[in-house]
Image (cartoon, rainbow, N blue to C red; front, top):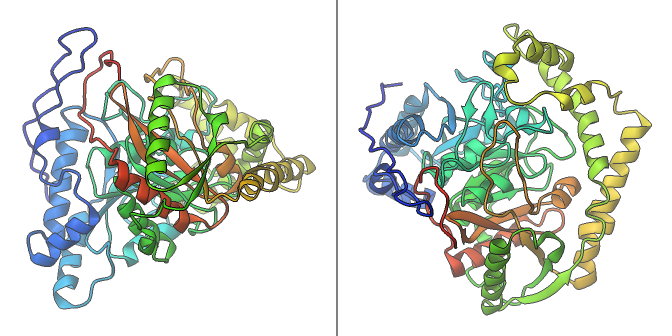
Length: 516
């Protein structure tokens, strides 16, 4: 890769009063590709205004200015040394023949637990895998390459996708350090896909890919003002992703608009979702309001009230409330399933890695962390690793009983039941509230929001920016039954177009936010 030109970056101005926020940085105001969509980039390449190489170079300069210097949000863990060469190849293809698709030449950042068979590492944020080069591309990476996307680099994450400790801090990894929220820098970026969330919100690439087991696409999307799609488990190929649990793991798009998320999901799934983009998509829809997930934050409830009113104006019928009565009855069973499946999955994954990786089992990882405690466990431990190591095989009756209970309560007696009872097209809930202050000594302070029923059921879940509170984004969740991605995209797009709620981040300093 050519050496990246460095820009002078004007530092953040300190808050002038206790209740004031710092002035946004200059870099946030001058970026040429600020908030640009994949469609706009594609049109620019078609007309000759842009080349794929020039676009990639501009994003690399942006990463240097904003991610590595200035506010230093620390969202990108590694750049692809072949990114510019790939972009040049996409330019040659454009001149000589038909495009591969709507992502041809478009830069994408992907989470560092997704395998790439190139010169980048796949570490899940752990120093134990810091030198690991995957033997083959993950299924979703193959799809991206086939679609002509330029994989620009990999994003930081919560180490081991937040499945090492019950006291972990989202966005911190031993290899990558801490990712900051680009809206207010002392706030958390949320969830294990925190690096992708912060990076795409900060305009470090056009599109992003995260992964979710429970909340790790939708929470960082909500906290960083993005559209996030957690698809039906199995819709996208799951091979080549460092696992937690095969019954809940999936990759998913994280983008600044519903249109871009639909384009990216289409490339990853091999199916066109853009036909679902209907500005009038809420008219006649029946939308249930899951009040169980409200009430944890007054400002969030105000944003949700305005969102519901907006949907009514768009012609939706609101059914309020609807209940998911079983949603709190399988929390312990979900964890039991994850512990069993993590041990099985991680042992199988580690066994596929090259000889330069010495940790070949979960027991090896536990030993590595103990031996490198200062670097790997300065803030929190590995009690989930140890609990998982104590589990037996997936033939264990305890695992089978817990998994059966989770399926029954989340599906037939959960989402399926409420959808059928009220004849709904979707259910809504707040994805999360104003994200918490990062607190490395004590870990995350999650206050409330929605993700678990859809995650446990393996059903799709779309979050869209709904508003702001205290200078921080609030997302609204749309969810329904299996393979309902197109319907959810239709509803989410209509909502997005009616509200235009996303506000770009200003990289404001650590200050007490003003009300509202």
